[in-house]
Amino acid sequence: MKVSLQPALNDGNLDANQFNSQRQLAISISALAEIMDRNIPLNLCLILDHSGSMSGRPLETVKKAANRLVDRLNPGDRLSIVVFDHRAKVLVPNQIIENPERIKQQINRLSADGGTAIDEGLRLGIEELAKGKKETISQVFLLTDGENEHGDNNRCLKFAQLATGYNLTLNTLGFGDNWNQDVLEKIADAGGGTLSYIQQPEQAVDEFSRLFNRIQTVGLTNAYLLFSLMPNVRLAELKPIAQVAPDTIELPVQPEADGRFAVRLGDLMKDVERVILANLYLGQLPEGRQTIARLQVRYDDPAQNKTGLLSETIPVEANVIRIYQPSVDNQVQQHILALAKYRQTQLAEAKLQQGDRAGAATMLQTAAKTALQMGDKSAATVLQTSATRLQAGEELSESDRKKTRIVSKTVLQDS
Image (cartoon, rainbow, N blue to C red; front, side, top):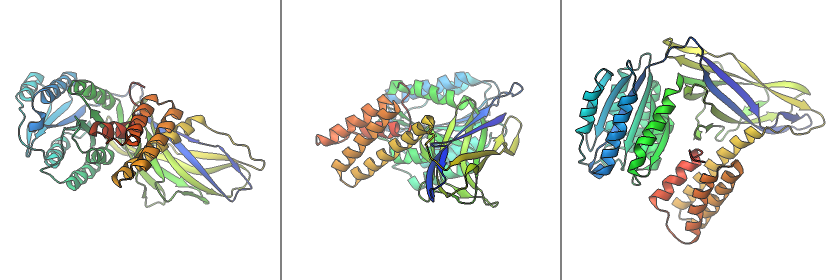
C-alpha cells in the first residue's frame, strides 16, 4: 500500500515585489490500495458505560449496536470489551473472533448500575487493545452518557496520549445530553479518532455502523506528515496547522532532529482523504517557479508488518511573478472556510463561558454564514438556531451545545 500526497496553495501565484506574503497550503493525504494488498485484521475494543443512568432503552440499544458489530467482524479479527460504572472490568478479554454467539451472550447479560469512571475504563481498554496490536488496525470505541464523576479527566487525556504512543486510535461516542463534550473531544483528538454524538438511543446502531465503516477503510497507521521549509518560508507562530477533513482538529507541530517539522496524522484511510491546512509566511522570492517546501509521509504498514516507511518527497511550488494576478484554488478556499467555521464556533463557546451572550450569538451567526458559504446547510441551521436562542435571552440546552460542537468539526452526514 502506498501514500497519495497532493499539495495545493490557496493562491499559487506570488508577487515578486512583495516583501511578505501569506499562503494557506492544503495537503490531501490518503492510502492507495494496490491489487496485491491483503486485508488487515481489525483489533477492536469496545469500552462501554453501563452506569445507572444507562438503564432501560439506552443500554438495550447499545447492546444491540455492540452485537451488530460482533456480527460484522471477520474471522481473524480481534475483539475485546471493557465495561465501566464507578469501577471498570474486562467483559471480553482480547481474542480472535471464534465464537461470536458466546460474546453476544456476555454482552446481553450487561445491566445498568453505579456511577461513572471513564478513566478506569480507558485504562483497561488500552491494556486489552495493546495485547492484539501486532499486524492489525487497532481501534477503541468509547461510549458514555455521563460525566467522569468517579474519575480524573486529566488522567483520561494522559491515557489518550499513551494510546497514541502505542499506535492505537481512540473514537468517542457521547450518548444522550449529559456527557462532557470537552473531555470526549480531547480524548478523540489526542487519540487520532473521531467524536460522535448519539442524541437518541435508536441512533446507536447507525452511529456504531458508521464508525465501523470508517475504520474498515484504514490502510496505513501511525502516519506523520514531514515538512521541510525552504529559506525565507516559515510556519505561522499561532495554530499553524490543522486538519480540516474528515473532521476539524488543531494539530500540534513537533521539530524533528533533521530540522524538519512533523505532524502526527495517525491512520490513513484508503481513498478517503485526510486534509491538512498549513498557514505559511513567505519572504520576498526571485521570479519564476520556486520550491517553497518539500513534503513526505512517514508511516507503518500493518499488512506488511513494517514500520517507519517513507513516501516519496513531494515539492510545493509557487509561481513568483512581477505583474501579479491571483491564481485562486477554490477547493483550498473551502478548506479555509471549514477551519474558520470551527474556530468561530470555538470563540462563541469561549464568550458564552465568560458570560458574553451577545458576543457568543454574534460569533455563532458568523459561523452560520461561513457554513452557508461552504454549502453546509445543516450546520448553518444548527448554528443560526443557537444564535437566535441566545439573542432571545434563552439558555442553550445541552443538546444545542453538543450539536453546535459536532457541526463545527464536520459536515453533517445528511447535508
